[in-house]
Image 1 (tube, rainbow, N blue to C red):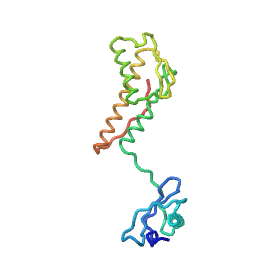
Image 2: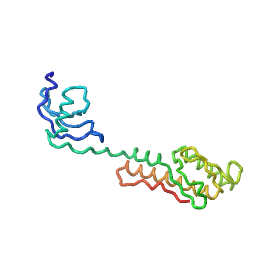
Image 3: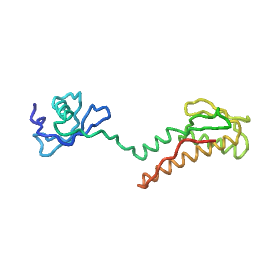
Length: 184
């Protein structure tokens, strides 16, 4: 083994992934004064990596601490909340029950339709009902402007509260994202 690959000690082994295929640890290599961060893999292409993995997994350097999934950043939490959309349940019109998108583009489209309804008391298509796509593109028929306006309000409120939670978390304040369950 090349001198810089010789190691004399390993500390703090922790599973580096949920599948237990790699172990993060600190390794004291002979060529360096300090312990260095190292990730040993079960199928490591280098002999010393495989040796360190096997020794750690066998408990030679103490118990391997459990893997802890990284916390989501506020931006990741926001993206996840928006990506899940809103799960709408409408007792009066069960055909509307679905998950609807609330991305910026979705909310913009919903808001534009709602603005038209508010101004003209009618749908933009000129009909008494309005087909609207859910998150999967499946159309659902809104039976009247009142039901659509309730949907529009719910979508706008959900997206707004998500943005407010993101801003609070980014500023270091506690916040939680809202439930995406909506009853119309």
